[in-house]
Image (cartoon, rainbow, N blue to C red; front, side, top):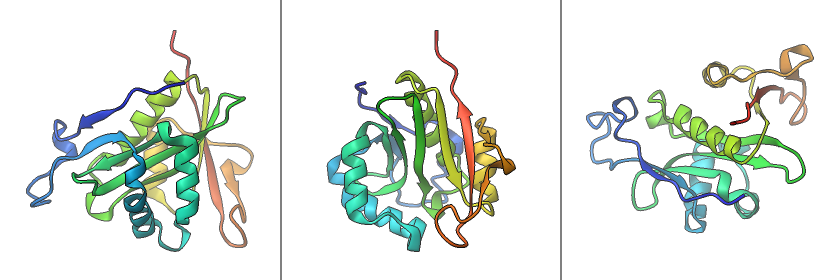
Length: 182
């Protein structure tokens, strides 16, 4: 499963860029992460996820294992504004979205949707049949995004898993079946 490099400017979609709102910002490019992105990826993860951010050593290992399914939004000169990471098992056709984030100042412009669409396209191309993710049950914006992409709560209990990440850290598990391309 080799992946060709992806470098695509996103400013061709008017709804993804509003230059007037982001003075001085360059065009965003959606691309596969590079090893040199790791320090910036750690900074971004800490900025967005704060106390539940991945430790740097884990991001390093996730990069080593899943680099072809780690996509970033690069504003230029390696300044990252978002990422998505999918982990796929080698023996089955299942994948988990381990992280999706966009910086606060770039939210509500379709960037999370663009990241998800691209990773789902790659996963489908690589033969993945099922994608799962977890989301904080109170994160309505994320749940609406995922549901609009076809994700549905995994049963039982509408996907709610109490104490999933420890006491008081509930999560909702959502699942998407990827139809095979013929």
